[in-house]
Image 1 (cartoon, rainbow, N blue to C red):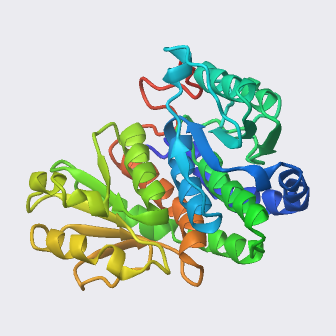
Image 2: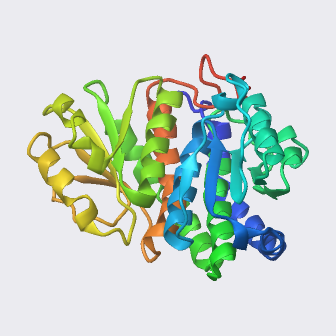
Length: 345
């Protein structure tokens, strides 16, 4: 195993609590910017993103629908970039999430949405990017330069900024200090995560699963392993999994459940019970579900709500993907065939 592989990605994961600190330091300003938006007139929300940012958008979707109570959907940017649709977005809020803010299809969609009457908000890691400039308001992720190809600190930052945005909208007060403290605690679990990753067998198939707020992290777990380890990984809602995909499961399959502290066990219990009948190779990211003695906890936060646990548990899934890749002799800093900035037309 090379000791040089993954040094950039690891350093960026370890920076996440400091990123959270910077977001906290700018939270009053962000709250002011959000309060100046015409949110009281908004009837629906459209989220636009790609890749890792698309997974963060799933988390934001659940936040908006549970905390604000209005419909929130995920955009298909090709309706503008490929099909040239004219959007009629009166009383619609469009929120674009992107680390780089460079992808032309996202910029084009937001420009068309704004021309169609939408209020546009961007969450980017580059305040001068085309996407940031296309929005009425850009909420800076405060992540600083991200050099590893696989996004880590920018994803965690998107989760926290999304949480801040909806809290400002709904009038909730966030406990930043508790989130930051748990983030630091997740860094202390890296040794445990590394040991488990070195023993993890993935040749017989890997599936990541979650529900509700953790659905975002389930998708991100699969994506991070695919990007860094270069193997196919499936991800599902634990509710959807019983509607067909479970037929591919066998006794050597590896299943990773995303179950943050505070989750209602009833949300996943039927799926977990059925999977336990098929395979014993079950792993958990998050401390919110009762495990059997032979099931393995990779890591996870305690003492936070379900919503906030998802934010800090993102650190654990990133460490797990990092160490899986290193153990397999891959370099997760620069996976073959991937670029840091992808510009989709």
